Length: 305
Length: 305
Image (cartoon, rainbow over all chains, first blue to last red; front, side, top):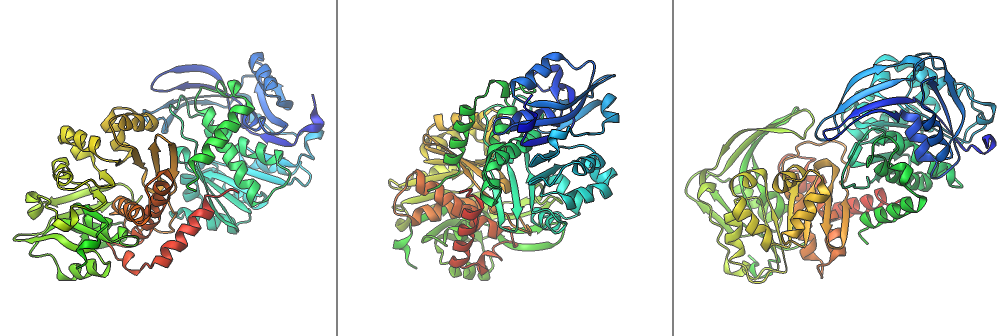
């Protein structure tokens, strides 16, 4: 394994998902924020994962990570069962109900970074408990850019450590409902101004199929979503967006407003592939050329000149 | 009145609206698709209205139309009461409930075009019964560009004349839910392909605060929404978008993919002002310079270069 080359470290959940859409039902799919984010990032930069799985984790999925070129030296395979999630999507393919959550080995997850990861310039703190995100932050040496993702659960149950995470990262990524919940503001512009005041240089507010908004001192950027003909399974879209973004940023030579904007578009494009299949099924069939093609397409779709 | 100069003719409803938002309640506001569309269009081109109002229509509103420079020679003031609509917005400022609809003089509306309007190069068929839209189409001589707006009511109750309208216009504008209802497709891309197959060169699918999508043989264009800090009253946003678009297109020298795209952005910007006040309150305070400023701002918000 080429541990020394890891430019981006991703920490997050690793799960076996059972997903039901109005059209299909699938069991024990490879899922979790770390799987989607690493696969998405791998199109642009050498990525390493920090995650935990049980003895029942299918070897085929280890091979799949390898196929994406993901460094797995931060993956702990321990006694017990892998985290399992199951959910059902409504007809609109947006709203979903969680049927069951079995934390299993994930309940005792304490993300320990391999020595080779500690100097990684880019760090993506996927959606896990803020105390675990802080534990990762305490292990890394001066990263160039750190993004944290979060969710309503942590806003409700772990606000204090979450606020510490927010104060220590370069970018916070969350969806519109979560931004409202976190700040108590309804206006998305006011939500963003409040979060920026807490420390991060950037805030990205995700709007699902409608794209996202980037806020910074330099202003606002409207991140377009690449329109897909059919959504097969929206699971992992947000994680792919975050991973694709961080991979693209890690793959560019400098971090500035321009490269952040362009990398968000890359994240958007990779996420558009993710939703066209269950799990990583579509992403496994996508080439760098396919990504470039959608990037060029999205450029034409947003240009009025 | 400078009847001969009218470049854009707008036909639509004219109403006195009573609107309740979570924050305020207003009575007998100037409303209706024709009011919003004409005011929005007037920033870019000489616009004339075809509409009906009752004897109770406040002279102050006639003066307001004048202030926008709207040609009113197609406005019939007849015996009876003006169309009245009242509604309540939910906390999200998107969903609304109609409390009452009194058609009054609007029930007998038959849009008759003044002679000077019949050669107008641009025609906006605002959201009224498809048979009335056809009646207008039968009076105009070879317009350069005709847009029709529609709504769920006509899809449910007047599909046949609506299909004839669709086959005779250059562009159909409708929201995402209506596009699904009209075509029976869920995927927005499939909805658009179906509508294009029925005849129009362009279809615009509106997504409210998330902007719109333009479809044509030349491809897809993502029309961004200008993000506003606070929405005061969303009534008339879609009509302002349509009116601002058609005004900008009428004001440009040629009609092509590029000018259509740019004009849609102008429509988006004018609509962003509309929602910042009740009725036309905010639009009356907006200058052409303010519009240009938001256009430049939106360009910065959509550029990653």
